[in-house]
Amino acid sequence: MFVRTFFAATADLPVVSSVSALKSRLLSLSRVSRKLPGGLALLPILAGTTFSIAAATAQADSLPDFRALVESEGDAVVKISVRTESQVPASGVPPEFNSDEIPEYFRRFFEQDPQNRPPRQGAGFGSGFIVSEDGYVITNAHVVADATDIRVGLQDRHEYQAELIGLDRASDIALLKLDAQEELPVVTIGDSDELSVGEWVLAIGSPFGFEHTATQGIVSALARSLPDDTYVPFIQTDVAVNPGNSGGPLFNTDGKVVGVNSQIYSRSGGYQGLSFAIPINVAMSIADQLKDKGYATRGWLGVTIQNVSQALAESFGLERPEGALVAQVSAGSPAEKGGIQSGDIILGFSGRAVPVSNALPPLVGSVAPGEAVDVDILRDGKRQTLEITIEALDDDQLASAGRSGTPDADESSRLGVVVAEVSADARKKFGIEYGVVVTEIDPEGAAAEAGVLEGDVIVSINRQKIESVADLEKLVKEAPAGEALPVLVQRDTAPMFLALTLTDE
Image (cartoon, rainbow, N blue to C red; front, side, top):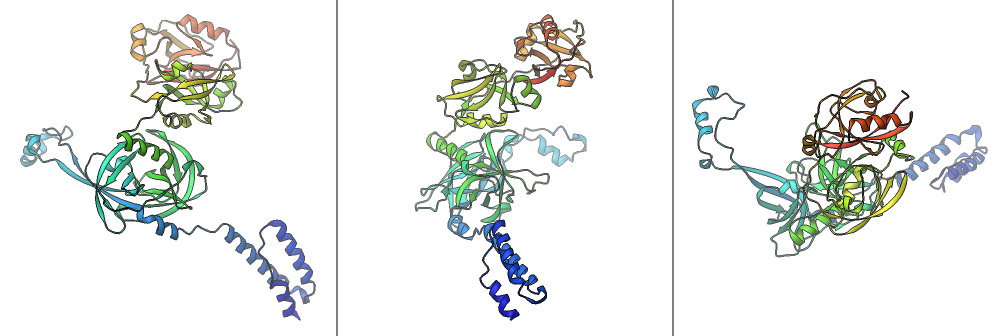
């Protein structure tokens, strides 16, 4: 009787897929267990239920199987081998060496005419992927930069000579063309804008020269801004990427390329859990430009921006920190022509939100020069929209400020600084039109608490220009107590806003 009752209770046990279903199943099973002697059926029934829950969890959250993806897409992933030649250094013993301590043979080598020395040969390798049947290949710019010979190897051991169509160092994208007579395997291009944090991804490349190595992980973060890579909103992953993976594809579980593996964060030179890929939408846009004209252009707005802290948000009347605070507008720039002013907070660009300052440059860079876009700003506590015609990015100069002037001003006890006039020559040199330089600062004063440093040029307080020491004293005297006010200072090579809160006299 015990055996028949037990199997009757468990033979048709369904997979439990929710908490409510679990409660219902346990209630049903508890009724059955009452028929069994001594509660002996409780343990096996609960064990069967636990097994079903585990099976349901495994079914819902099982690890992805990338075997089919590697088999179908791996043929289009290539290994790139390059040869380079470096310039021969000028003749003479390097300054870090003492010529008297160098043996005569080596000293003669250093002192010989560099034209008689052969160029230094180098070699390197990376990864890439074929995007068209006629042989166009995308890789990283740093893989093929300065290469004198580029060869591309496929998984079937075929090797092709490659021509460099063009490269863009700012986005680290390069486009190659293979000298092939037959149709080549190609990858399927996805949409990097549809990526989500936590999504499974797969990288295929040649780390350390080991061809067609597959590594998997998840998307750790999106739109990461890295130093010296202003115009790329990187995809951060925990996929194992190492030297040699550069330029290889990052696939989603649908077998579509969503990124180009580009960089790793490492203290040792090897993988440490942080990998960065260029979104495929950015890469394809650059590749199309390289194919059409051999170089890439990107949009230019012409502003110096900074993040909005909680204190700055309060001083500008924002409910929470968001947007890109405009610290400076370049003369003659699209921003100036369109009406953007220093102190504006850019909250939206071309229909897309700007949550933080580093989100703005990639949005601007993706706009074709000559295109007009709507820019949403906050000015004097009111939101408005400006139409800006974006121009092509060119080398622009950032204003810088240094310590100048004669400390002949009286100390302002309320602000906690001693300031001096900035000479006309200094203003021209540092690219500023007005301001006063901080020559001394009280470490416990309001200015120090706001982050003002000795040598800063105070340009404005609460968006009011400061053209003299008298202007500063007047504004400080009239400023309300206990209220955060934006103060614009020029420091080193860039302007920045700080939140200043003054106390009573």
